[in-house]
Image (cartoon, rainbow, N blue to C red):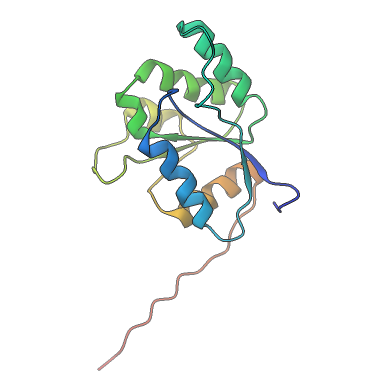
Amino acid sequence: MSENNPIRLFVGHLYAPDEAYFRVFEYLESAPNFFYVNLATPDRPPRGRDREVLKEDLRRQMSDAEAVVLPASLYAQDPVLIEFQALYAKTCDRPLIVLESFGTGAPVPPRLRELADEVVPWNSRDLADAIRRHARHQDTTRWDTIEFKLD
């Protein structure tokens, strides 16, 4: 992964402004040396608001993705459309990374947990590492350093 070869990423959405959707990009932007292209277009909904038209548009957006990220909090708003995105990712053999609900401590819905390749907390490093691992099979060999004093 480099600036010349960014990860093609689809972030789940419901065609409406949502804090969780925008927060994903805040976290990814703060991850050092993480380059991606967003394939999702929630700001350009299809003309027809029929479920099948929405699903076809989501298929188009997800077709070139290397990984799919779904914020679990969207499930409560429209479980059918979010589950469709998760199932389509699995059907197309795309890795599915589910983000826990932000700040609420609410559990990830069992159906999303079952379909997910990985469930990650809201942490920029954990999110970027999960995407690298599943999209490009790049393992990050990071070590946390903990400093403490002995008295």
